[in-house]
Structures are given as C-alpha cells and as structure tokens.
Image (cartoon, rainbow, N blue to C red; front, side, top):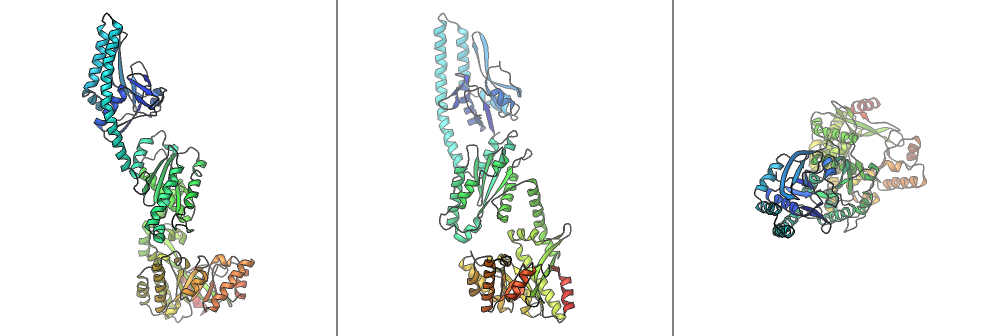
Length: 607
C-alpha cells in the first residue's frame, strides 16, 4: 500500500491520548505520534484532515472525506464506519474499562486494518504504556491519590521518551519532505512540475469535490519566441510568466509547469462567469512582459478552460482536453476557449480529419478549384488562382478552412502545396496541347513551404515533367513570410525567389498590405506583381482608403510591377480600380471559384 495517502479525523479533547494544540495548529499526543511511526514504517502517508479545536469526526465521516476516525473510546456512534476498528490503548478509569481505538470509514482502502494491526504488534512502547496505566488503575494503594499521580508520572515519562524518539523522526520526515519538494519543482521557473500536479490531484481531488474544480491550461508559444529571440529570452519569458501566475493563485489553487510550453492551474470555482475572468489580470501582466526584446505584437499565450466532470478519472485526459482548447484559442487569436462538449467534439472531428488527410492526398480526394483573374480595363479573363477543396468520402466537399489550419499546424501543408502545383501544371499542359497558351495559373505557397532549402529543387522536379510555357505558372508568396524572420531565413527567401524566376516562373507577393514589409518589400525583392489585400479594397468609398490604394497602384506602375486587386465584391469597387488603372482584378463580383473542369470548358468557349 505504498504511495497511498490516509486522511484522519482527530479527537481534539482526549488529552494526553490525542488533542489539538493551538500553538502548533496540529494534533498532538500518543495517537498522532504512533501514526507518525506507522507512516514511517509502512510507507503510507498519514495526514490529519484540517486540524482544529472542533470535533468534526462525525461530519467528515458522513461526507466520506477521511479514511480513519481517531481517538474513539467506544461510546461514540458514527455513520459510514465499516465496523472495523483497531484498538490502540486499553485502560481502566474510575473502575470502568476504556479502549482508545481507530475506526475505519467507508472510504478506507482494503488492507488498511491489517497494516495497522501488524504495526501495533511491533510497537513495544505502546504495550508498556498501556500495561503501566492499567496496573496503576487496578493496584489501589492506601494513598490512592499519590499512587495514581506517581503512576501517571511514570506513564508521562515514558510518553516523553517516545515523543523524543518521534521528534527525531519528525526531523527526518521534514528532510524527506524537503527532498520531495525539490523533486517536484520545475528547475527553470521554481513552480511545481507534472509530478507535483499528479500528487496534488491525487491528494486533493475526490469524488465529492471533483466537479468544483476547473483546470486552466496556459499555452505559451515558446517555439515562436525561441525562433525570433533565442532560448535565453524564451527562458526569461517563462520565468516571468511563472512569477505572474504564482502571484495570481489562491491557497487552494495548484500551479505547475508540465511541459516546455504549458502551465496548468487547477483551482476550485463555483461560478462559471468568475472562472472566465479571474485570470484576466494575470493575462494582462503576462502580455505586458518587456524583459529583453520579447515585445512584438504577435500573440504568445492563450488559455484553455476545462471544468472537471464526475466521470473524469484520468488526469492526463483532463489536461489533454484543456490543452487542445488552449491551442485552438491560440490559432483563432483569442485569449481563451472554454472546452465545452461542442468544442471538444469539433476538435475530435479535426483530429479524425488529421489522420485521414494523408490518405486523402494519396487517393486524389483533393480537387483543383480555380477563381478567375480579369483584366481590369476590359474584364477579360486572363488567368486564375488555384484553390483546393477536399472531396471527403464521408463528409462531402470540405472548404479550405476545415483542413488548412491543422495542416499548417501539423506540418502537412507542403504536401498540399506541391499537390496543387502538380494539378496546376497538368491543367496548363492540357491547355497547351490544345493550343490555349493565353491563360495563366497562380499557386499559393505557405510560409513553411516557401522557406525550405529544397523548395526550388522540388518545384523544378515538377515542372520539368511538362512542356507548357513557364511564364504561364505564377508562384504566390505570402507577405507574412518576410517580416519577423531571422536574417538567414530572409536570405533563403530571397534566394528562392531568384531561383523561381531563373526557372522562368513569375512570382507575386500575396496579401500585400497585410503585413508591414510594404513599399520596402517592393524594392528589396525581384517580383513580378503584388496582390493588394482585400482590406485595402474594402477601404474604397473612404478618403483615406482610396488615397492609400491609389498610391500603391501608382508605385506598382512606376516599378513596372503588376497590381492585382483581390476581394472585389461591388460594382463601385470595380469602377474605382478601373479608373485608377489597376492591372488585374479578382472577386465575387466577377466569378466565384469553380471546379477545374468547368473552368476549362469556359476558357475553351472563349478561345
């Protein structure tokens, strides 16, 4: 029964057998010392449950919060006791035989009685004290009062000897306790580690109080901080975060750092509204951390909140639920997500899709969709942007929002990027064989894909299998790949753009205006065009928005770069762009994305 914790409800007024000492705030006497010896010899951890001057044994037995009722003399009646008892001391007082014993409650584990009785058979001091006290009561000398005092003095002397021995044991226990605390501390931050959380959960969370608790998972994007600022700044950020969280928790809260990117707080919370807001002061302080250079505007932390249910028995599963919520919140750019059944079901469905996506690519379940590009002046179709749809065998046609986020997160997006490029090349090859060399296609490449060392080699391997004119294939690179990268990454990106153009492909910067490379990027990178972000187009109709957009189009013309406006949804926007001599437009005002077969039919009719 090692590594088991037994909770005891004590008798505060059975001096000197067992009593509550207000000075130390703990139970003292023969029984507590015997239980300390028992704990040392058996490896079973014994703790008095909330020591105090009030006798709470009946209440704690009724609520099944303790396994043992102590200091019982045989006259008390308690509910939820199994009837199993362990006699510690038998004596005679006023001619009446009295037994002091332990009663085991319904929460006691199997085998506890046997462990206690085996211990008592080996405890010679307790047997001697019991014999001396009983002999003193039965002898009845002439000077009964003085004899009793003498015998009690002898008994107390023996108890003092026992207490002295046990005081040595207490010092040993304190040393052991210190070693346990050291073992359960996170080396970097000083807060508890996962082992600490597991022990505290085992000690504090019971069937009756489980549903009062919430687990808060604080997810820190250490990968981002480490990549941009280095490990030293990441460690400093984690230490500062731990310090803030330590200042936020209460006496009943359990704080632990359980992974490189995860802090957990397990705390009782009765009010659902309160549990959504108590952490906000801490979150505000964490966001304002300015140690070193960790001060960029990108999100670094998010929280998943999971309320424990009666059926929850696996701490690892509880943590997993809250962690998924925190990562989901981080991906959505929000501070926190409450892990309701609906949220967890949606995340479970996403996990299922993650397992199926590789097979979906292998089975050619992803279909090529194309949204037309038009010449702004004439509204003539000149090309299209390649998009993807997943024709799932069970769920039907899935939009990119259902699979792109987790493919990026799970580092699967490169497979999809090159899959779509292969489809685009196949489309252009068919058009070329049919004499249609006036229609171009653009392929989007993710940040991850476009910055790899073998990017150019992979692109070259694909296009070399085809004979269509190379300038009909356009590679779109998102502006977000350029800022917030190390110098090495920026150099690699520059080399990749040079390599694409050496292959004869066109390169355009996607979502220009969304990041902050802006006009500097137009000068630094050898590009063929810029796609003006939809948020810029939505500014048409306002003086500041129109001025900014007009300036960007003008700069593109002066640098001999094609200006492509995306997200055009109204006739007013189309007219404005035409008047400002924007080169190419795209949007729902003209055409929605279509399957590649329908696109091919359309361009064949217009040829």
